[in-house]
Length: 356
Image (cartoon, rainbow, N blue to C red; front, side):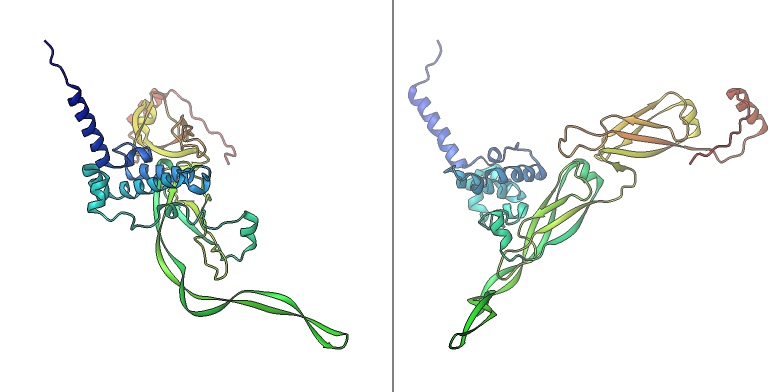
């Protein structure tokens, strides 16, 4: 006879489960759409993608937009911090709130995008306001980062306006003034007119910027941070622009999405064939098998072993491998020379041509 489970027991079980969910708080992994074993770069990538999509300025008709965006920021703050994430995994959001300082870090959105939504008005209105200068900097990255992707942290010491004592002249402009010189006589002149504004001073503040190096990025790609450039005392800051530059690699050369490399093999391997493994940019092995003679300068193509296409990482270029032959340095005896003649069965051949 099977034991009966009373309705009271079922009800208590449901209540306990609901109580546990309340204690656990928000599911930060679900909010970011990542697995519980996601690494830091995967967390950063997920936040960067969702932050732009869920920003309240992009979703003005959604009454819960601000709440969703705050949830996203909280999820990133916890999961991107190794100590907070460890506490969260053991004790949930309540444990983090008890044992760590929540909300005291830099706004993560600004770290990834700058003040992207800070200034109101249309593009034309923003263009009419005074503006600080743009800062343009080269950012050197490795070919490994271009292949696999990465996040680079840059510390920026940004001049930020802070209140100061007194007032200052501001919004200065040239206006036409008319003065009466006498009966029926007037004089017009152009004069500078300014307003009185509270005084400010610029203080350098440390700011962390997160730059995502996406697979397949091209040399010269411009990566902007809005309003992170030079300040303007009466207007908007300029932009900070990083120009992606790819360092020269010791083993591979990039041409569009294809990779080129050279491999030196022995004369013996060139003649009888060989098997080898070539280490790729992400450490995976590319197997090469040659059963026929390999002549100097011979090139083979390994399809799909190049760089990911920037617009679609599922498509990859090819890898081209050119072989150089390392000839032996020792002298051959007369007997060995005769053996080689018999093996190759060739007559002497001398042909002069322009090979350039």
